[in-house]
Length: 486
Image 1 (spheres, helix red, strand yellow):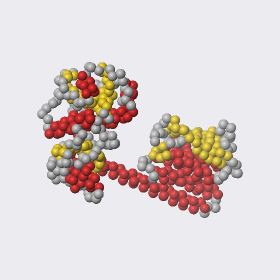
Image 2 (cartoon, helix red, strand yellow):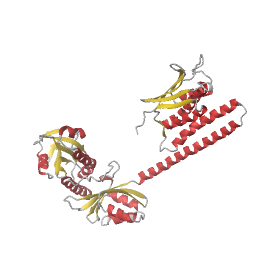
Image 3 (cartoon, helix red, strand yellow):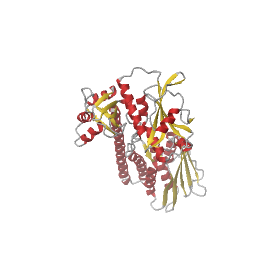
Image 4 (cartoon, helix red, strand yellow):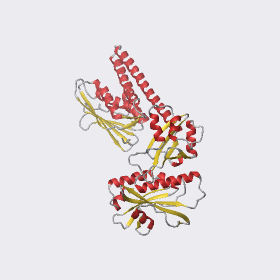
């Protein structure tokens, strides 16, 4: 719609915003009218109309099989559009049109904002299935007529009301029509069923909806008065009410077709099962986070025990092996600690990498400067856990074997996301690889762990070679899902 309005008209940003607000709300008008809606806006030269939006009803057959958006119509071809635009009134005159052997009743509703008519809504009703209307259909049509008059007067939609139309109740979910005093004149079967679930044992017709809703909901003190007003339809608002065995979502729409409030339309939906599932998911998420938290605590306990055992070792080799085990356990604990703070099974791995590098860098305090470059991004737990261990082994291996006693240097861990691949380089400026060294066959336990995790668990590739001038370079190529945008 933005492109069509800017290309063909002189409407400003505020007018365009009003049209967007209208289009976000007009599914209600379409459903209540049992009719298709097409929004026509005059072009900047006034010689034509351009259709910028279209809506089909959920409550009846469509009268347009084709997409009308983008069509241009010369002024004069559709007199009802001209009359609605020029006179600023709803035009209903004329006989039905025949489209592919289908009779269609056409009406035109001017779209007014701050005294100016911005465009015209063509309301097209398929008359092929017309039958004697029920009480529900009559209520729908009367409510649609009131909304159409409010659009023509510029009082609908409500600018201050921000509604999520995907989550908001629709006409078919449940509809209640109130008079000016908040007394129920009509309640659809779905609306009545929803109130029965709240605990209502009688019919709704004749009851004051606001007071009835407040009586069914648990006592909430001063909030009750606000609930009474909202459910009475005094202002355009949306809320949820919980009572008995159910939860219903309410949306009130005051009806002021001639500037004075004559009643209200209340849309409602039974969201009991939806809220129950949401509570189950919240409970499940909390349980998963608690599990990660306990796993982290257990791993830290294991690391502490290994550290105590290492201090009691007389053999330097045994003490070093236990300290390596402490760092391996610690790297996994860092991942579980991060997962315990998240709502899903994904982690920002940059923070984990920084903590792993800092933890392993304690092997050579002040001698080797270790740092991360680039971004790992967000990874799943299935990728983050083995990758944290791989990173621990590679950094530890570089610090232990790449630099001699007292030797200073630098170590860099570089990460880059390329499509669905994660490229990781661990590079140092130490003494390089020994003569004839084969990283794919080396028996070092750390490198065995790296090969097993990278190739077997992560499905990636691992290579180790001399640096360009000095030192060693380790290359990892790991498949990962595309990065998640934040």
